[in-house]
Length: 470
Image 1 (spheres, rainbow, N blue to C red):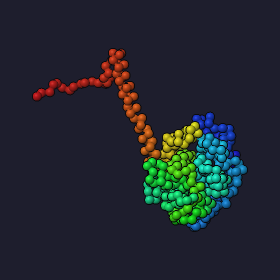
Image 2: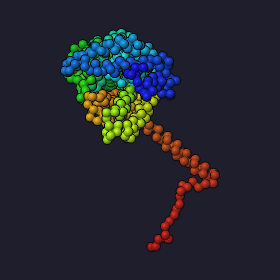
Image 3: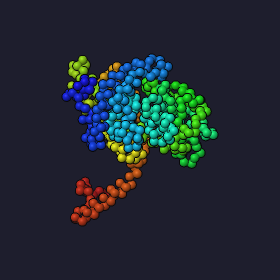
Image 4: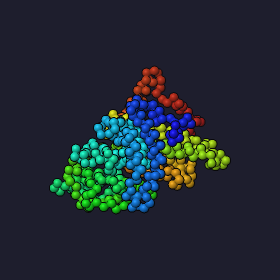
């Protein structure tokens, strides 16, 4: 057995053997075999390659956002030879993918989340995954052949442009970028930021949300989605935004303006006024993909945590860290929280497989909030164990924390999901109140039927002293 796969005191327990019992009936033999291949590919090839990828990016900003590290193409070749390609497109909704369910891909994505290069190496990287789903689900044949095919083949990359700096973009009805029809074209004006993927030199297509009809009485039918080629005139990428100081090169997150950008009318997706429908269809799967990868990131943080507390060179107060009870408690809590979060993610994936992202809105929202919180807790405990090394470049933990913290904002901040979850849960309030009152009344009636006073059994009615004097 390769030492790169060792994961227990007994050597190596395969990924397929570690599938939670509750999920096993939903996993095919083919998916289980592929899961083992994913684990082996990530642990033996991708994680060691992460260091090379970082160095091949270069040093300066201009170099980093013009780079395409050769090791990525080497990894992509190996992944395709292993059949590890486009696993993210669920078989229940798309014919273009590898034929796995959301649940099966969820188990695989956990391993992809442990490496910086693994998702791109298998053509399962954001924002391309969500953009491919948009075009596959809502695009016409012309759009699919022009943009989906090269994306599925890993020949180009894409960007997603929704958020704007001047408005509260957590409410997408606030989006201001205009998309105006002009003959056989649409003309776009406005600005976007946190435009994920726009920095990559291979990014050739932008999926853009804007307003085609700001006067529509239905505020959810004012928006449209259009495909904008990166070569369209009038687009300026001003700067890339850092994430806790990390630039996420080469794909990054850009601040971009559109000045009378003309796009063929044929690039409109699904039709005017369908933007909200499309974006909701895109963000649902995107949210659960983030959650799936975050489980893997939490597992990686726990692995680093365990490695640190078993390092014989480090003995604070004369004992190794695993001899200190507080550390073992943190390990135990991390194990419990990761396993619980994983089950929530897999439950959401099963729900999507049974219906679709819309039918699983509650479950997706739950994991969108829960998993980043668990991930951050586990990473924070690992950082604490490493001390100064934990917040430096000597471990991957600081970068993982930055990524994990961002997950509480992307694809809708926690507050939006919590508010919606709370509102929907509260709709049951009157029914619960009525049921509890009815059960109380029936309990009183039963007490009377069996000859008991309905009063509290602990009722005393005891008075102190005699009667009060006037």
